[in-house]
Image (cartoon, rainbow, N blue to C red):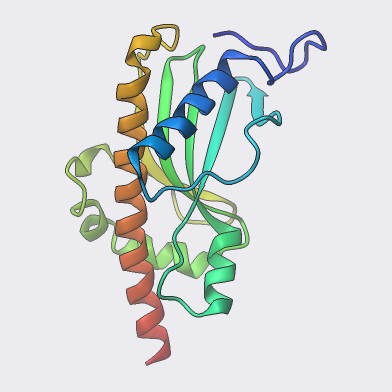
Amino acid sequence: MRFNPFNKNESFKDSPHEEFWLGFKEHLEQSGRSLRVFGSLTKSNINYDLVGETSFCGCEFGVIGFDEGVGRTFKRHIWLVAAITPCKGWLSAKVRFSEYVPIELFDMLTKDIEQIKSCFDTPNQVDWDKPGPGPKRVGFFRAKIDFDDKSSWEELFEWLCVNLEKLEQVFMNFLALYFYDTVK
């Protein structure tokens, strides 16, 4: 599944990356999951860097229970991301906080890191960025995946769904507590 976006003869359209993400989107639709893909999967969303080509599929981060202003801010600056780096055999499910999310918010979450990690079935496998300025991510990663083995894709899609939904649930609860504490 090698794809080089700098090669003008190749495009994301009709690439193995697109095939994987269209399969993921179809899996979401057929499974009745609450996750919703945002953005167009037909545009190039591949990042090519020293690691290799990585493609992303973004899902909306739920904003139920927050007022319109806070909900709009979350929708723009906190989202769920599924990513693949086929040349390395990597798969990840993560919640991403943009650089516009106040540093204090991520710092507050980091103070509760052990409590947050305990909400997951595999707390020792939660990958957590260090506090400080810039975008942040928290999530789960898998390695040694053969993306050419299409028979494993359904299991990979389900792994992504389970982990993205759990990340959304846990972080929605902790963010709700944070906002409740700041307004009372």
